[in-house]
Image (cartoon, rainbow, N blue to C red; front, side, top):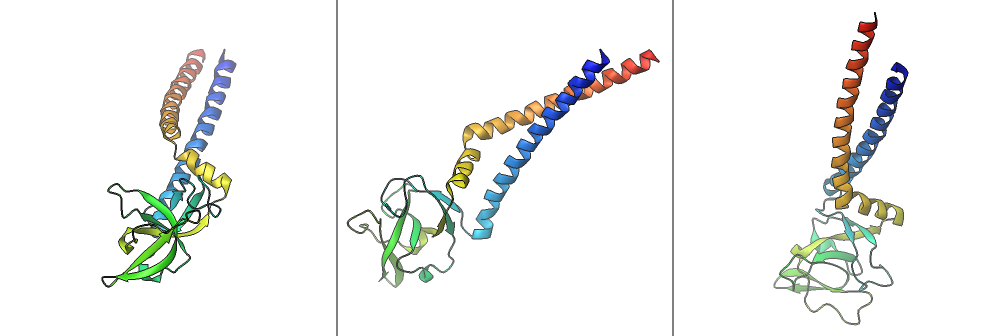
Length: 187
């Protein structure tokens, strides 16, 4: 009977190690994403393209890496920017290309257009609406991984795994206490 308890104890240790590895990988991944905010200098360093206004350059679902820009007047014609829609009362993010720059009331404003659109956006984008400049598109596998770890179900599962680890650890401690008592009683 002692052999089976030890085997159970070893299996519990193996399961605990696997679950802890999952938690560590998840936590490190989330930490890297969080750190990007400060390293790159933008609140949302990764943005997912929605809709098809930037075809063929960017497709719906592409994940983009942004760079924060302190000096908005340094942004040039031809760059792709992410900005809050100046016509919307809700924080709606748009990914479009700068096709012209205008000075309106002494301030630089960007005239933008989606590559797939026939005409420019109706309202110029003021510099305070610019979130960042697109510096690259993430590879599909990395984009899918980021979507995965950012999923609510995955986040909830990580909490569940932590609870399971605590339960297993408690069970494992009780098993060790039982084995010690059993060995003491046999002597």
